[in-house]
Length: 288
Ligand SMILES: [Mn+2]
Image 1: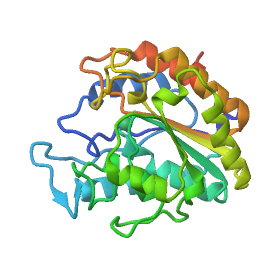
Image 2: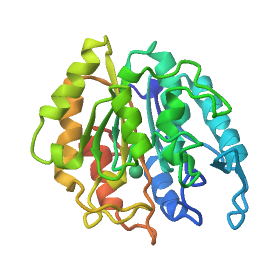
Image 3: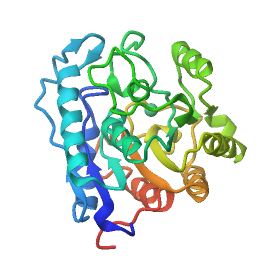
Image 4: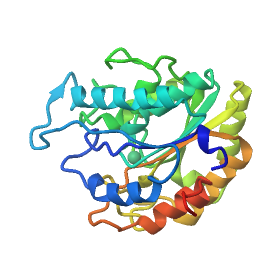
């Protein structure tokens, strides 16, 4: 990363927005070790939780705790005021504060690409699980069922999907109604045309920078089983790297996240994670 002073690496090992008990904490020490020497490294502290009794409030499990963690992340972002943010180490819900921050910083000119097997666009009232990691895209768009709203909500035209495999009807209906470009994994296996469609769509709406949200489960379950919601028929590692490189070549990045790394044993899958950070997202490790 070229401009260290303006670059933030936000380790946010939140797991309470997904399944508990979670394997995400098994990956946290390795990710911390990998990034902690970066000049702009920050870690969001987690709230203490009783994972055997996840409290659900108005359709969101751990609503109160997640709110506190989001506020802690937002405070770190506001204080450091970075121009580029890598958010990593947690569930998909961990990137809310970073994307909301960057959207304000870039004046509503970022295009957010959700590279994920799932659409994460449920409202609390339609979510079958109550897991916030399946709602974060809807929250970023602004929705009254969430407590806090982003200071500047994403517009429909700022969101696009690549790699979807497992979505629910309410999610498909929402993305269709709001004209959000959504491509299944099968459509991007060996064709770059969908990426061009997304980039052209963003450019037509005056967007200047990308935020790449990468959920590890966009990869096939055989390639990368170290996630909580593995899905078949996903991308291979080299194709995912190619896609991320292609997107970066078309528009500069304001930020990115790599989420849902949940190994059963520490160290599993770290070789793949490193390739995704370096080759896929173009990031340099400290001390490299
Ligand atoms: Mn996912």
